[in-house]
Image (cartoon, rainbow, N blue to C red; front, side):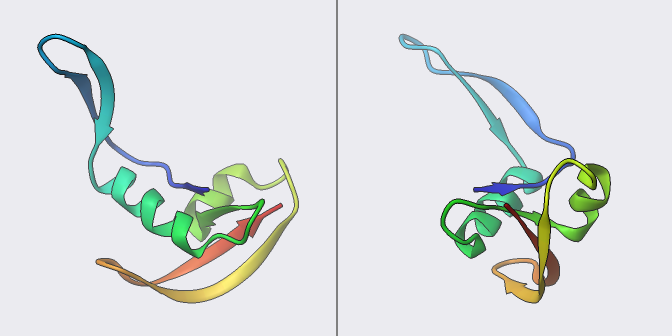
Length: 78
């Protein structure tokens, strides 16, 4: 799983069957980080980890290339 904190746009889509969804750069980045996560773990940016520190054990993954974002410091939370 990938998690990132930041601004999003949220709303209801559809005309017959309504669904609630979120969009934005934050959502896209979380999706890209999911691809980098190890099975059974959560991948977050170092920036997001600073907000979560103390809520779990983490292992720095180093600076990884994230599609559409360039190199980012990522952390794997177990």
